[in-house]
Image 1: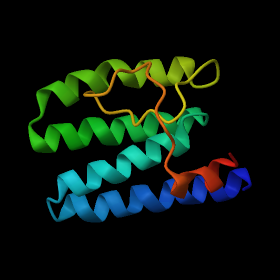
Image 2: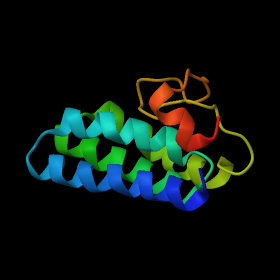
Image 3: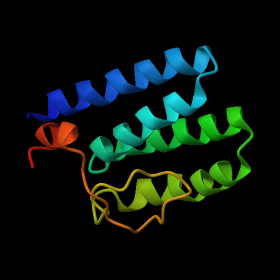
Image 4: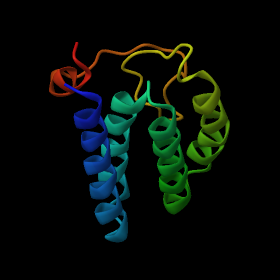
Length: 113
């Protein structure tokens, strides 16, 4: 799909994250942030927005491991999105930052894989 469709899919997930967060459904929101992360990895601006969303989600859950992990991943996303990214990595602090992961079939078409 085109870049515009990919960005639209990221925006849709982030909009749903906001709805879920407003309802304190933080774990469901985090699952959508993980999907948005996989989709956004090669788009620096959106990649950083997703990591910021993960940071906020961790803060809302008082998950200090997530907050600390996202504090380091946010600048890394800004610096490395265009150089190298571990495809499929879901971006949470409980996943090694450099580990490639399988991409769900539901996301592959959006990524043109």
